[in-house]
Length: 400
Image 1 (cartoon, rainbow, N blue to C red):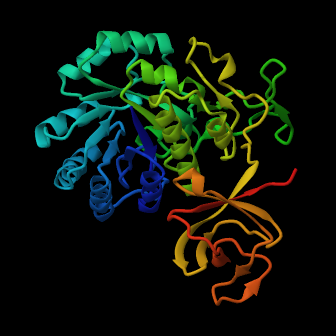
Image 2 (cartoon, rainbow, N blue to C red):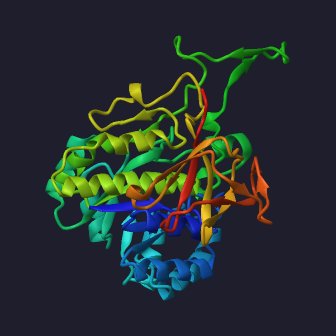
């Protein structure tokens, strides 16, 4: 079973591959549903494809917008460029886009996006007749429904989401963003108004805001929890699902590294017949996330998918930075958050056996002067005497 990881830019792609992804999905700057991510230009896509193929991995490119007339000409040109770059698959939602690919680049496998709302084996078979090689099933399906689709459709690849943020809308189709601020979520411009805090205003009292409550739960009536199906990984594997996808092209290097590693290592242990190791579940608690849910895995019931209390993230650990260079016993760190030399930090690596815990360590600034505290959005050096692997990521446990 394939572990499919997100990549919002080329650097994140490298970390996804290093931490165990079998395939990576990476969007363009125009036609995927994450236009706010850094995304990939034509040169990046070519480099990303080469990096993936060098390691025997795959690169999938989403073109999963719902296309308007104004997109068609540019889409055709872009698909031709992706064909030249030899990407491994294109992820689409729109039947028109699928038709363009079939005409321009029929040799590129097409994956049908979860945005297409495929909820039955009959829909799977219909897309297969249109040339689809893989279906990314709707998130609203229960596991028993997924197994039935697998049993009915043996000769096509099936993929499901296994971890990450979920939309309040049906399989991601939403008009809230367009309604509130003219940003169309279905072409990649979502501003997440489902996470906002709402109140009522009475016309004659414009300065008086009355909070919206749903029963006695609170204000956030459109706020979904984050998906986490780690405990169901063995069931999914045994059901014959071909690929499990981690959401998160907008997320940090640390998120991508930690989630990819947790699911990949857990899958390796399942394949060897080992029992579930709660260590990896605990690792998923160490990334920034909303309250977790298994969503519709057991039954189609939204009662446990919404958080009516808060939209805040759970951040028990802080992403500090990533190691970008090594010089003898010094490592250079690209910093995103400050630390002090008296802190206790952890450094994780693709091979978790190399993970380090550092206490009372020595910090140097970019000029190799000893300092006590680092600054965010800069670089600093740490003294580490032992030999360490590449792609180290540093985290700091937040004090209660």
